[in-house]
Image (cartoon, rainbow over all chains, first blue to last red; front, side, top):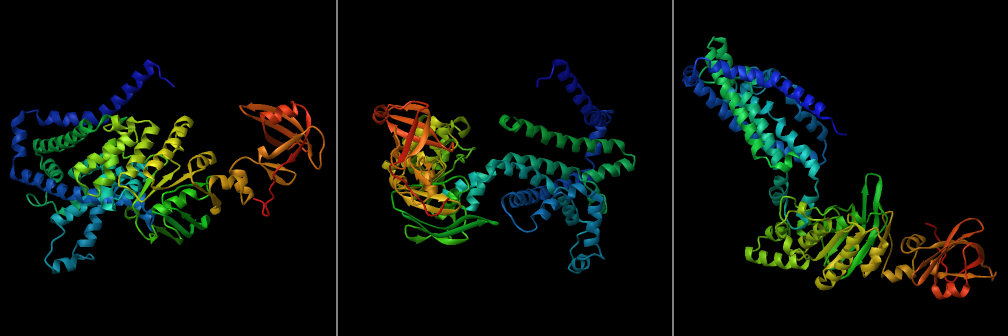
Length: 268
Length: 320
């Protein structure tokens, strides 16, 4: 069925108008407000020690959470698609839990586990390990909320490519490790990259769970997103906007980079 | 290089795929596993390759027990119906795969891949990707890839099933020639009896997970042990409770002995042979194959009433 020219233009207009209203508009306003008074105030707000520390912390957490979730996501996807075992349905459903659960609830549950009254809390504090209000809890919270993305991207691709190529590799003498590196990974690498990008974006932007478990100590356990909230609450709007811009730019950069690098056949 | 399948059984849930199958494949031979879909022939091939495990029974390769061996340790070449081409690799890289995982020297790999490209007539297409090849070319690549590590046995799972009739006939002929050159022990799965008859030294007929008969193509045709084999390998008529091959039917212009009365409904001249289709009194269809001489001598014509008798007939104790 071919659509008439008018219909096509109409559809395009509706889609673009909707995107503009929902996505581009608010983002543009943030950009505009940041540079309203020139470049100087924004730069000053970004270079305060607390803000720099907040960005560093966000990057450290992301740098730990993304590789962990990439490996976990690929292993889970392989288990779900290629193996049959008891509890597979449970695993499949469990992976989606972070999408359904509010991050605040995740933060609270970590509180219950690692707090003074929690299951592991007293044992950990007896051994001098700080989890809550420190990097470990923030990393765990971030890993939890960004857990599903790699697995969710890889599962359909694994299903689509089937396991015949892997079987062929086995009959040709490749062990399971060689088969994974030479056959499986090259076949799913775009899905993995896309999953990594989504995971990265989610980690950079995580707020709720980290807000609960970090204690929000300025210059210590404050991430970039927490810093935005902090600046906003202390009426440092220039600072809040400037940090937001950097966060938004990072996200836009990775998405655009992916679209450019991704081969044409994959989008067809 | 020989393959011995001993009392292999396999179930998927309640469904019995293979029921106590034993088969002896001689070194250097070309054997067909022939049967209708669901007969278990592909599963048997996959068990030989180690891609599937048997519930019971043993697999011996070159006399050594391989039942518990992982597929990558069996040194078998496997060709898949849908090619299983490595899509992210060129034709050369596909063929080189088995040599690269064995860490052979680069120069040796290059030389060997060149030879194989020549053997499967893909010399000019070495740098293409599988998506740029036709089905027939992809399957030739699959064959070269399977042959590259010099396997003990070559296993082909309906290798020509996804190709059109012309390419299929070509590749079939070519596989036979290739086997004469490479002479690796070869087992291939097919549901096409003509394909099996044309190229194999030995045919194993499977039905409902059971091995019905193993033998040379001619043996199966001339001496089928069951009604299934008789009807699956070649054509057969039911004639008054017995089974008769179309060319074993005689037509008479007059009643003779206990010949059956039938009417000629269609006559087709097939070069040297003439196919005569008849209906007997009960309306059942009979197909007779006469030579031109027999047909012309009898002076038969469409609509004529004739008498039909079997020259050679078979009765099988157990129906089906």
